Image 1 (cartoon, rainbow, N blue to C red):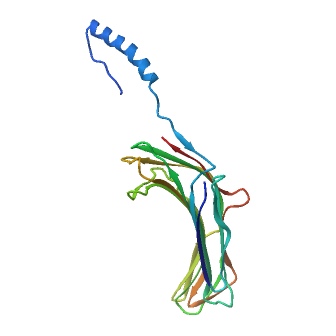
Image 2: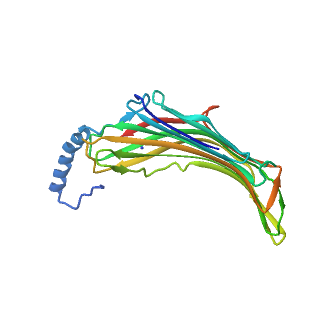
Image 3: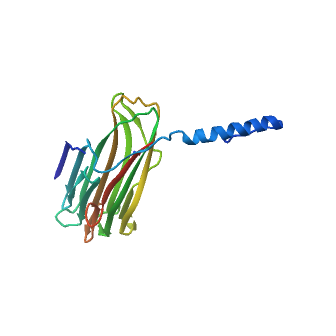
Length: 284
């Protein structure tokens, strides 16, 4: 069975200087000039940073949810993706299972993914800016694999079981007026875990290899820096921030049968202290 759902809604709501060799009089003149120049430079106004934080106003967020299953596998969106502009908090949670079962001798699978995409309207008054988006991420990832028993029914056969959970996110600046994009020069690489076991039989001789079950707790803060030049301040600008997660769990065979064992994958970025905090957006 398969299912998909997506919704979109708006809510108020990334000289050195050098003096050469001069005569005494010339050097004295330069020294006097510097006495007058330094206070003037110090008094010059410095560019002030604009810092945006929750509550965010005028944001628009779209959401995606998708899942699919085969055989006796299962998949679920445990917590539908969300973003709250009043707090800057967001999250999502997905799960998939792929058990070995006699009802589906050829295998089973489950896959789920979800995400959110938020637009932050920005007013840019200069032709060149640097935008820094600070985001805190707390997440739990699990990929569990209990190796199945593979029974070949031919000289050449194979069995597999695998699980995967991952999350990624990014941000970029978009000029809606002219359709131009500016991307970050610093990144969050995302996080994932995986587990698997493969058995291959060739002319009656079988061998297996795999990776054990794996889990991860993510506690990190990412600063995405977006340098943008050649801007037209009169244009309409949006900062796009998005996160998505995927879980996959499956078992399968070719010219073989399987028994016992199962796989499962979990991504939790929504409960038990987990979540995404879009802490600030700084424009200089």
